[in-house]
Length: 382
Image 1: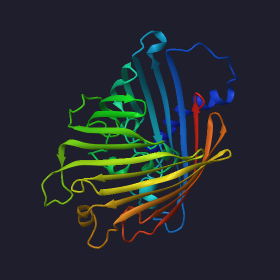
Image 2 (image 1 turned 90 degrees about the vertical axis):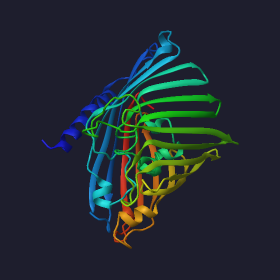
Image 3 (image 1 turned 120 degrees about the vertical axis):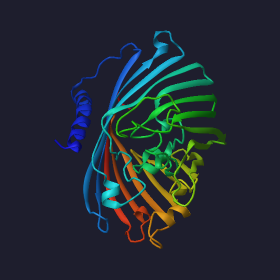
């Protein structure tokens, strides 16, 4: 049996109990709160590459999660909580094969095996201090684009300036690494510090999870401050690996992989929110030197309508070494128009349209139009 088929079956196996429960279970009276809660979700994208794409056609990608939450306060352990998340992903490399895009068209695309995605414990002795340790998704703690979470393209989840880093990517979907995160918070003001193992996944197979003491293979250090600006929120952060990486220019010595980012996000009106984000990475070790993204989301009746743009610019070293002379564009830009509607407490649908300009920075590649339809199901009901 092909590996892609096995992944699809694993994802559907995780999703099937969720669907059965949603469709067959009758409403039940509220029960006493439990210290252990279970949940599951399944999200899928149907994607179609229109004319002028590198490989015109349609693909189906999906992600299934099943998780367990432990809530210590229910049994008198007021400072403790824990979380375990199992994940399975299925589907081909739509963005690379059909479009040639660097900024992944669907945030669900990945080449990985079913595995433990997150497994952490958190200690929170008071409302101002928390510490979390275990397998942690960096993007659940840092560079969170709340308004951008509506969109399908992965650039609106975490900036490409960060997601490009590391030997196998940082500790984000689809593979996390062991980490320690400490957060200080007072109202809307917050300071978060994180230490992540530099390698996400196993040394021998990045598709398999591995739990190591943070820093075993080097460390990714990250810090982020959040400050209110009127009704808006400013996020500013910086990150750096403790080890050096091969420079993109083979004639140069190994270079540091590091960067900074900032984001401003908030409500424009009662039914309109917006954000803008800027990220800069060291171009000696990373292809994307500068990223600018942002957009707006409006509530129109039963629909949430969003328009966003993601602009990733190559550094000079990447332009000179990753492509033949005069073959590299300076930037890849994605425009996305999307709309989401909740059909039931457990079901959302989301038609989507993306236009990828200069995919993969390739001078010879034509801009591509992608039609998509996302649907997501979850229990407990959202």
